[in-house]
Length: 75
Image (cartoon, rainbow, N blue to C red; front, side):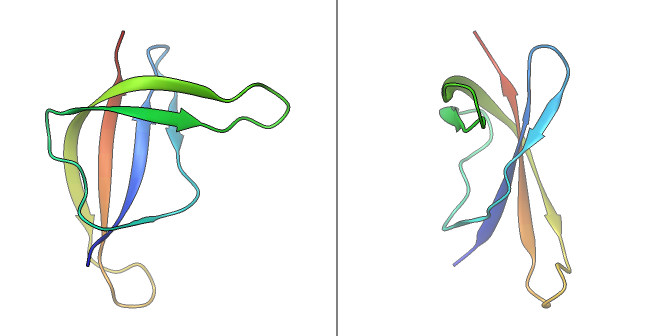
């Protein structure tokens, strides 16, 4: 099973990275997903995003690779 971490580039150019990793296969490049953004003190927000690329960090401290999923906000 893979572990992956998502990085969302917002339309305003800022990048938001999730704090927790996901277990399972990462989404494929080119598909559109809905991303839930949890924002303290503000209403949660769901935004559509297209998967742009995947990269692999070969060493996350415990010897297991983590896949980084890079996505761009759309809409």
